Image (cartoon, rainbow, N blue to C red; front, side):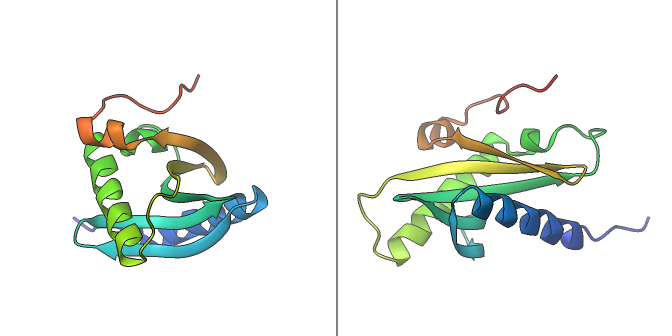
Length: 132
């Protein structure tokens, strides 16, 4: 069985996400930060708030909506990577937020405050928002 490389699609989704974030007033600080604790697609600032952004892309909904892929385990890894990023830069006592950008059929949408540290630590269940 041949496996499809989705990295190209992921890069296109991240590019669309960065464009949306910049149009929304965010300043992109870093992309694809990786540590053994996890990976963060985009790190940005929205005013004085550090924002850690997970990007999920889909070309359709046969396998669910993009935001459904941001599972509690994924939230936990993102939160751990965010803690590593903040510590490495000496950032303390600054507001932070976890956003998700979904890209579905080429259309990017921003979910501000998609989850918080309490959700990640508890392994909260559910999705972000509802689609109809």
